[in-house]
Length: 55
Image 1 (cartoon, rainbow, N blue to C red):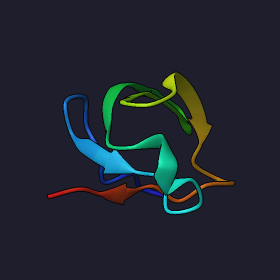
Image 2: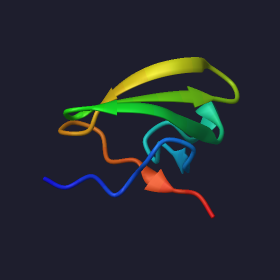
Image 3: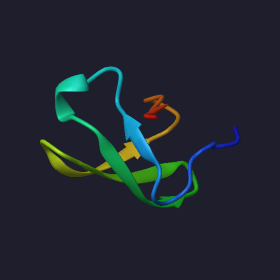
């Protein structure tokens, strides 16, 4: 699976919209570290959760 994100991109987690807008910090293999407005830093496994780009 190819990830379409890079550090600095703004994303949302469609399963947890209350987390707010997140900013991608780093991507290592399929682990994406995102700093969300309302819940802070989360490590997302892209195999389990599909983030959406926020424009």
